[in-house]
Length: 130
Image (cartoon, rainbow, N blue to C red; front, side, top):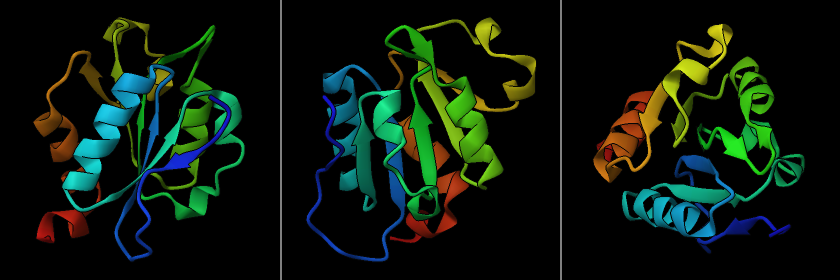
């Protein structure tokens, strides 16, 4: 990985959805789902990738919990502090989530596309109006 991939060439006022997942197939599948729904997807495959992001440009984030040997908890806190709504999409257990992040939406893998889109529409109301 290493490179951030924005799979859309469009420059627009569409909401930007960050997808953090170390499984490229899952990340691409989610990115295509998000873009088909009228948002822009930014895919990060590692926590190192996330350091290149401008959090001010993100409207919502979909995070896998386990990214290689690490977890995305600290990054989730950073996003939440920056006002970016977060959901975890993970194969891990909901009970593994730290208490301070227990309010964050947790979608168990494999999760339906409709559940992910429902979260995005709730978090970023402007998307639902397309």
